[in-house]
Length: 183
Image 1 (cartoon, rainbow, N blue to C red):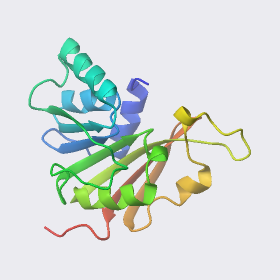
Image 2 (cartoon, rainbow, N blue to C red; image 1 turned 90 degrees about the horizontal axis):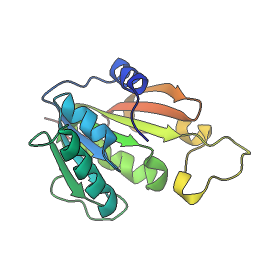
Image 3 (cartoon, helix red, strand yellow; image 1 turned 45 degrees about the vertical axis):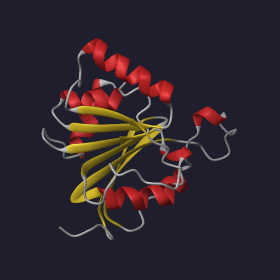
């Protein structure tokens, strides 16, 4: 799902993202966020479990000349896997993006890991599809979280901001993870 200009505007209203920062796009898919962030001057590590999605992301980056070169790197990683690659070290990232991916992960583990991977002033930006209570379960490929599950996100974080993206998505911005490494 491409990133709209309205989504980018809302993102910039709620997140401190600036050229020179280092970002992780967790579950990057075909790389829409990755390319936008790299084009804005952020260094981006874009990771996804799917080699097919990563190949498409790299092809799109090369075709459009957006974010190609040193500002954007792609790597395959399964965030559900128990191993953590060397590129995901404590205190590394200023920003972590997780767009439409959180419902497929072990939420609690990912939030703890993301908190550790962020710098002390880093921010975690989650875009989460909503599942209305009482609605039919979505297909496996279209998972989401209920409003109650979204309200329960963020234990152990000092700051939280929520904002609606559209009728079917909410964004949650977390910062100040309590167990983050001191620098």
